[in-house]
Amino acid sequence: MISHSMILSLSKDTIKISQEQDVVFLKNRVKETAVKIKMGLVNQTRIITAASELVRNMMRYANGGNCVIEVVSSGRVNGVRLTFTDKGPGIPDIAAAMRDGFSTGRSLGLGLPGTKRLVNEFDIKSKVGEGTTVTIVKWANG
Image 1 (tube, one colour):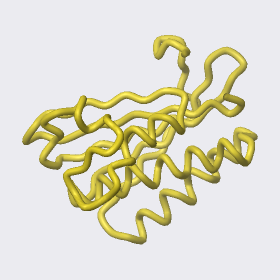
Image 2 (cartoon, one colour; image 1 turned 90 degrees about the horizontal axis):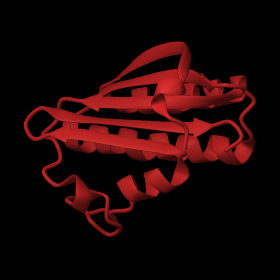
Image 3 (spheres, helix red, strand yellow; image 1 turned 60 degrees about the vertical axis):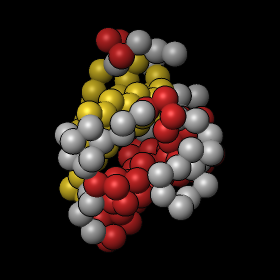
Image 4 (cartoon, rainbow, N blue to C red; image 1 turned 45 degrees about the horizontal axis):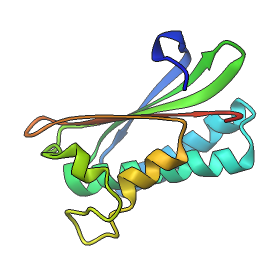
């Protein structure tokens, strides 16, 4: 894993997510960004799937939020960093939410742990009553 202090942001784009068409726009923008850094098709699929899971959670539990899309670099390696931020109810027990099979909704509960498996770096911070921030990084060749 690459240390966050070694990562340099090369470009940044913030997308507000408040309705269903914003989700489609976000997924398209993530794909465009991945293609721009010459990310392979398998890794493109992984980052788009991870983004879909996180944006779906943000819509379901927090009625939307923001996603910052960044092209990041660490040495000669480029990647895509996505930071999802919402002002929803927060997650009272992150450890439980990160277990396979855990769900507060009617889903399979594969969202957060499944997302973590799809990316190279995963960070989640949440405060009850204030919201949640999830940051993921997928390296172009990782």
